Length: 245
Image (cartoon, rainbow, N blue to C red; front, side, top):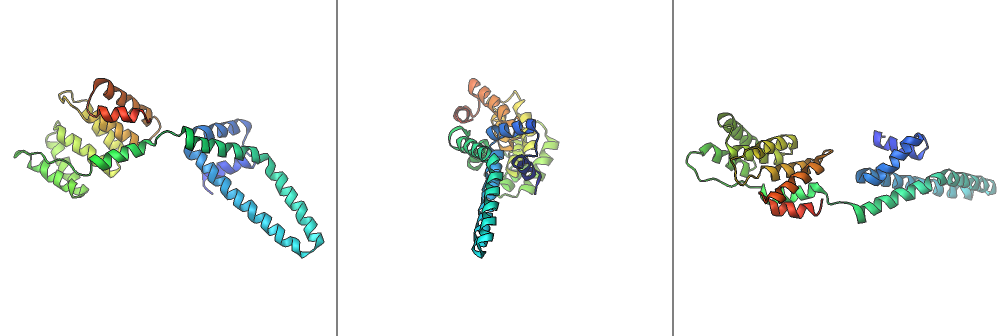
């Protein structure tokens, strides 16, 4: 049993102190993933209970004495389960209410949709002086990410202020699932004031939404609000997403 299941089991077996029980109940209300874990635990527990009752019923066919003993066991089992009935019902209600009424849009899905629509292929720039950049872009578009990383990395060392390189490295990190590095790269791009229409803030918000670490959703929201207020790059996406966050 992993630590999460042990924690949930401790609650239903009465091993948690009163203060921790309160935290458990609040977490059911506020944490969708945790509420789902509780719901799964309850489902397993119900299945075990049903199996136990079925076994007891089958044993009752062995005679009147066995039947009476089984009746006692059944009653005992029901009595032991009663303290948990209200908690079970509360968690299920909270979980279903969260799913159907209060659950916000999954920010990772918003980010995924944008990534799938915009970051599967990089645009090729028409410049004879950027042969290496074209090589990296071509490698990315063929999904040869390791080669693209080498090319972009070499360009970044030779020309660290190249905005296309900074942007493409960030996109590469994002597609590869290296969200910390993507956030760092797009933060760097965001601070380049010479770009009139800077995609850095939007891409940073997308990286935060995809990473979904504590505080990321709120940080992404603030970036999107700023984009919308300034009518910056991605203001339409920002306006749409802010309605769903």
